[in-house]
Length: 277
Image 1 (cartoon, rainbow, N blue to C red):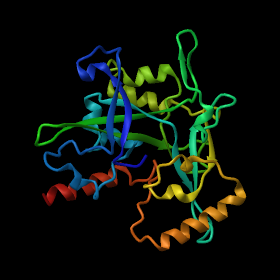
Image 2 (image 1 turned 60 degrees about the horizontal axis):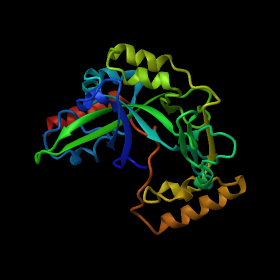
Image 3 (image 1 turned 60 degrees about the vertical axis):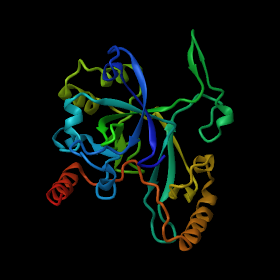
C-alpha cells in the first residue's frame, strides 16, 4: 500500500451511530485530509505529507489536534509495512525490508498459501497475524455531499527493536486490551496519548526480512514485493532497479511509513498554504 491508497481501519461504533463497544471496519484514504479544507482536498496532497503523524507533538498540531479532540481514534490494519535501511554508497543504496507480526510455526509472511486462515468459536483466529497500528482519522464532506474518511498512522522514536533500521517506527497495538483502550471514547485525549507513550514494543512482537528493490516503485503491488531474498540476491536486485530507473524518469516511489517532516515543520507549510488561498 502507498499513501492515497485505501486502508482498512477499525473504529468505535459510536462514530457511526452504533454502540461504543461495537467495532466497525471502515475504508479510509491513507493521508489525512486537512480539517479546514472546504474545497478540492487533492490540491494539498502534493504540498504536505499526512500519511503519518508524530506522537511527540500530535496534540499541538493544527492538522491532527482537531481529530484528537473529537476522539476520532482508529486502528489501521495491515499485513505488514516496508522500511528502508540506509545504504553505504551509490553502489549499495537503501535496502528495503518487510516488517510484519511474528507468526506461528509454519506460517510464512511472504507465502499466503501457508496461512490457512480460519476462525474458530473456541480457539479464535488461526492463520496469518496482522499488524494493528494506532491512528487517527478525519471526516471530509465534498461539495457534492460525499463523505470521505481519511487517516494517518502515528509514529514514535524507535526503540532497540527497530532502531537499527530506522529512527522512527509506527505505534503498534499488540493485544486486545491496548486496542480497546485506544478506541474507547471514555478515555480523554491526554490519557490516550499517555497510554501510547507508555507502551513498550517487545522484541517478540515483530519479524522482518529483506526484499527486492522492486518495492521502491509504488506501482508494484504484487506478492513479489514481500518475497524474502537472500543476502547475495540483494546486490543483484539493487542493480536491476538502478537499470530500470534509468529508463523511467517518472518512477512512482513508494514511501516509508515513517517518511515525513515533523508536525511542527508541517504546520509552517500549512500556514503558508492558507495565506496564499
